[in-house]
Image (tube, rainbow, N blue to C red; front, side):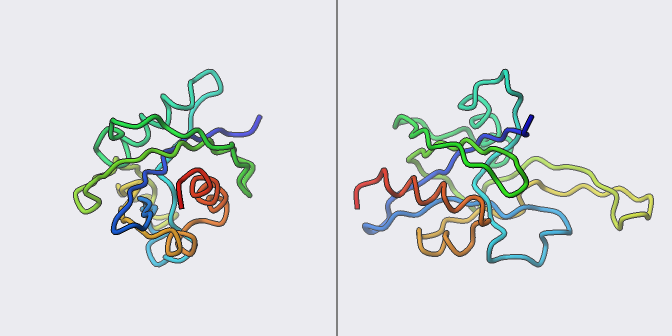
Length: 155
């Protein structure tokens, strides 16, 4: 069975333009990548878990803040990633201090084969992007999520 992932694409409107919050993956593999490397805030969940509950948990883990309250989430169509993973995303209107967001961490052997383990944040940067900029920054597999979200919002 395919791995499952659930996430939040937080959006706000600033000066009449939609912006979305994206996260840049942490760790040495992603350190020098920018365009096409950013992600919605998401994480894996089990098939017996509610995707909305999982998305809220992952948002808290990867930003250090709960999902902003206020509007009902927009459930977006699950999207199969090039890896085969299925991402279920929810659009949520709200605001968050991107500079103050802090992600949980993971450990990995680095450099590979060295026997040394280092800790890295799952998300090393959080940033707000206009929809056009987000399109260029997002992983290719996450772009349909942005497109669908924008289709739900007034233009």
